[in-house]
Image (cartoon, rainbow, N blue to C red; front, side, top):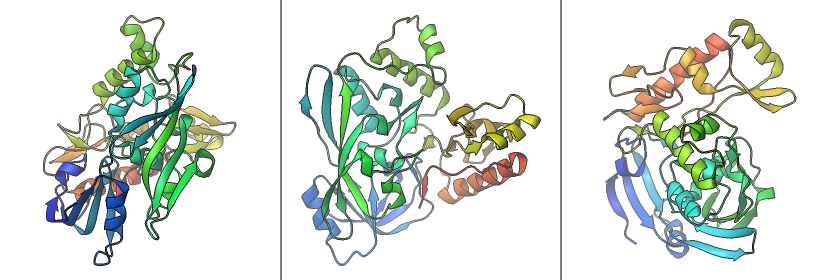
Amino acid sequence: MHIQQDISLKPYNTFGIDVTARHFVSVSNIKELKQVLSLPEYTDKLILGGGSNMLLTKDQNKLVIHINFKGIDVISQDEDFVFVKVNAGENWHEFVLWCMKNNYGGIENLSLIPGNVGTSPIQNIGAYGVELKDTFVSCETISRSNLASQTFLKSKCEFGYRDSIFKQQKDQYIITNVTFKFTKRNHKLNINYGTISSELELMGIKNPTIQDISKAVISIRESKLPNPKIIGNSGSFFKNPVISLNEFEKLLQNFPNAPSYSVSNNEVKVPAGWLIEKAGFKGKRFGDYGVHKNQALVLVNYGEAKGSDILKLSKLIQKTVFRLFNISIEAEVNIL
């Protein structure tokens, strides 16, 4: 364990924003993490996982702690189910592929989501009708204030749409590992959200496996979303807003073809990407940053953009969408 000085965080965030960490350290186990958290000379600390859900807008004059815990363990199983404990530093998509290789079902719809396993509960990541909470059992954490270990069962995590107790109290807990429950047979397939069913049809598949669904999701995402290794981005920048049925009926008066997904008896979710596209931002470029041409939810860094530029664009989009539709859209990424 070695604390480095003046390290560029460009390789550590999927937006590819080149800001500097005044102090930086990568930790590979809980002992090292507790040692670093105990250092009295560093009063301000930033916990960094996969760097996929953040927008860095300035240099970080604090100790940046990169969580690099590795390891996947099967802790119990029977004929139908398997419980898997995954350390926080494992890449999420690589973990999904590991599950597909072992025929463990439950997260195939979450293929190709950027980031690490340790940060996945914070946002309760989700895609194509599936959320992390659907397979989540528990996670182990370290308290930033007193270094105490604590296990959170799902019932204590307060999971919501892109929300959790870890997001609500983001400076309190560091997730060190996550335990999931997957199916080993009789998998529950979810192919009715988005274009999964039509993609499977194009693939000539009538009786899909979980592996087929994963491949379909990867194909869809690759056709819509830029690869962060080529074009800097954090995936979906905005949450899909949830509005009342009354508000949606007002929207339909001016936009009869507005899409929606039912959330409850009196609420619907409106795709933020549709709102942003209708507002005229899809594919718009402002020098080295802009909105991706294939997916209006994705803000991109084409090269050397500043985080402050992308933040300014996001605020312009929010303001314009509210003016046109009277709907507020909220940023999904963390602004730092």
